[in-house]
Length: 147
Image 1: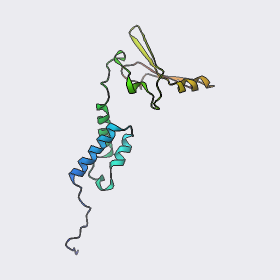
Image 2: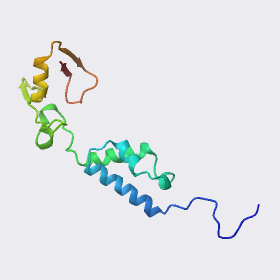
Image 3: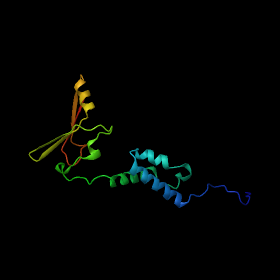
């Protein structure tokens, strides 16, 4: 094999500082946006850095950890749950018409927007379903009404 001095047959090395800067940007994106974690990871993983960055799964875990820092502490019981500020808004930004029912030490929270209630009222068919498995530990059941 003949080699000519000064020519490189490998990709340029990625400096550790570039990787650290990219991961810092991933953490900032996670804290400042609602973008899906995989989208943040893919957006920040430039081709040149790709081999030097953590796997997409690890980047997504990092994003979830950063976002968890901005969440309130998880309540121990349903009675400890306090809903205020952003927690009183649906993902659309519309306020929840909330019912907070407390009886005999039990608590039920009901969430619906005006738009949800209007669609439910206009629906010809309404379906309801409850689950005991896919629910926060503070509650016994999740019950959903579709219209």
